[in-house]
Image (cartoon, rainbow, N blue to C red; front, side, top):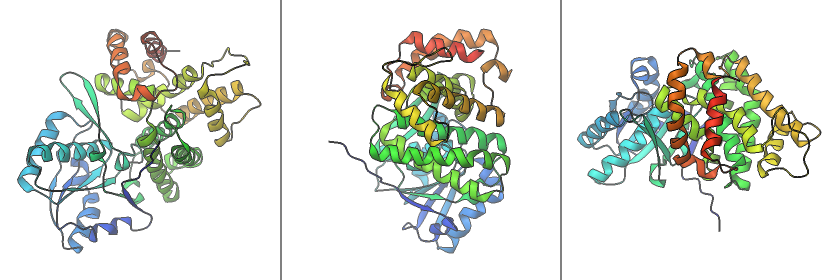
Amino acid sequence: MNTFEMKTAIHFGADALGRLKEIPYKRVLVITDPFVAKSGMIDMITKPLQAGGKEFDIFCDVVPDAPVGKIAEGVKKFLQYQPEAIVAVGGGSAIDSSKAIREFALKINNYGKVGLVAIPTTSGTGSEVTSFAVVNDTEAHVKYPLISDSLTADEAILDAELVRSVPPAITADTGMDVLTHAIESYVSINHNEFTSALAEKAIEICGVYLYRAYVDGNDMHARQKMHVASCLAGLSFNAAGLGITHSMAHQLGAIFHIPHGRANAMLLPHIVEYNANINKRSRSQKEYLPAVKRYSNIAHLLGLSNYNEVMSVRSLVNWIQFMQKEMNIPLTIEEMKTITPDAYFAAVDKMADMALADACTAANPRVPKKEDIVKIYTKLWSF
């Protein structure tokens, strides 16, 4: 038996933040990052809370990649304040930190049910609707995915006004993260009709609106569409899982601090080739790997469909790389000019081991060996 469940109530569209006046909690802890706290953006959160007569405090010591030390500080604040709910405001790091803070604090003092309202300020992670959180051990240079239904937010608020000011480079990185979530969940060994429908719509939206949002951040129609696509892809991968694009990207982030969405974008074309076992020299075959049909469907959704499977997969890979170039995302690690070859290749063996052990690897449509992962990391340096 399979089960598809959506725990999170999603509020979206015009004035979605007005929901904060009506949330069924009187005492809330707002968890966010210093940028949101110091900018006018925080007023978009606090004003409706005040209008609804809510008592609140703000913890704003959240930094990228959710390091364990900062989560411990958040746990301390949570236990001191004892809120009825957390309102998490920010990108994936702020929402993941909030999930982990609530989870760990209630293990120390389980004084009752504490709600979680997630409000994303980027269109990328889908964390507002998933049962995942990624925390970072900065000393060991390891990212740990936490997976538990208890991590899932009770409510998500999608208001595109919060992403209007996101710079083009971050719009590109987070948008490619959405696309990667959708593609990986679509070809996952755990996909089903529900997850596939969500992924297909997210892919379709990315094909039409991602570049529009990148070129003009004030295109609020495109912004709203990408905000919804991020949530749709999150719902899809929350049930279907991901794959080795994410497993490998986690290591690039932990060791070299490459932004997660950017690492995904750089890896994605190589993983499509690997999972399909189709490259520039491939010819038509009598039989293809299971992922090939799924990738061909994606090409069709993006208007790229060709007359056979090989051409469809090649068109998809080319389109992904075209989007990278159009949005100034490097195709190779060498292009970034921030990492030396010695440092990179010294880390490849460890990264390969960690990627194989990563929780995302299990759902990949092709079972990788260590030498496969090493080969992809090597190709990512320069090709």
